Length: 637
Image (cartoon, rainbow, N blue to C red; front, top):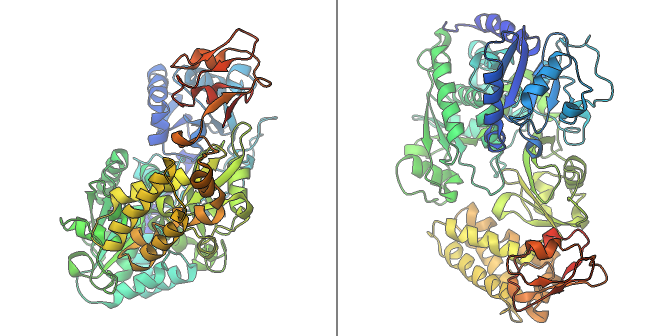
């Protein structure tokens, strides 16, 4: 059917809301985002499909990522009469047993209970919190925690990620069941464009792609200029370790499409473009499906819902250039030109794509928009801090126990994210630093872990919000090498158009490489600081102006590491191979022989239960023995 009104939408919505929350069958949702598939979810899905292909009482479905990537594959099972259960590490070998145990209420089966992550207390999004809980009369299973109260999920508030992991991304009807397209159709029928912009301004929503510019002001400015206006979605997520946008596109593509529709309505645009990173094939596939579905229902195309408003979306895939995450470079790439930034004195809201007024926001920004229109600008502004409203999605990766995707109110401390949600550093290692904001972000030490996460506070300590990547580092991380690594990345990704970025980053990288190779000399630290200041001030685009952050913050907070590399010719973290060697502590060695068995060079010798010896001339400093030793007997010298 072609949807003509909110009433038409409500009829479909109610049917699918019940199917989502009170299914007729036992519904098995397998997390099938890229992270789940990489962990083996495809094999688990296929095994369940094969086993229950003729069982009308079991429905095997796919969803996106709920965020807890550390324990993928994740499976949620629900029914009308039993508690919703979330299971972790569900492989092809145990998924059938888990489903059968759920069917027979065997929640205390030791074999499968260890896979229970928790009971899903309330699967509804914040947009539906005024509805009756359809499962409120189902008794919980004693001894099993509620998912929302476990460390990883406690404190999260999901708005942009509200549907990820709970709906089938290939089903527009399930998106309808989560109030999908209600905000757009309501705005289409009742709101003037200026009313939409006012609501977005009231919400305080800032661009989630890194710049943090107020979204409402950008929309209002773009709407003022005459000409063919364009809505552009930046899905060229290039930061190492960041995958917030990918998760939304793979788990809830319709939320982004609806956000773009609302933006188009607000500024008077009939054409949208999605610039997606080429390394995201699954996201592109699900976007293509979503656009076809929305078009079939009359939510994209000409004269939407019988109105005079028309809107179409085209997808373009990037060629892998990190610099094309910058707005003007992205638009140049969309036009078929080389993706190079231009000077900022001409704003894209006035002359952007094809020299016409263009509004560009990233995936997460658009995903927030339908929720804001449904609940109001004041509701969204109720989360966060004075200058940074709402919530923000972050990817938490690196040396942390619970890796994954989280969404938290702005203003939460770094400490709460790393040590509460992330549960700290694995093993007995010590926390050293966290980098926020991708390769151009700063490295923040433990002494500043109580810093609130918002745009101003992160800038105050020398870092940036960026798109939302967070990389945790432990005692085995060399911060000089980290700075070298990110500058190497940025040198390769620089478009080379302006001298400060092209030459400044190269010269800084040469100095850092020399320091890591044991060739550093006095004055190098001061020269790096001087170069960093020059690159910040005079580079053409955001890649260059933020590139020195890793260097300047590591010098500021970990200067002793630089001095140790330059003066003492030592890398205490055991990363820079010319500046350390491994040695076996005879007092700590138990003679377990594990290190000797794993050494690829046969450099470790010794009798069982006797202290071992490491022959330095054979050692290649691969670190295998260091990682394998459970007694901390392998030490770095």
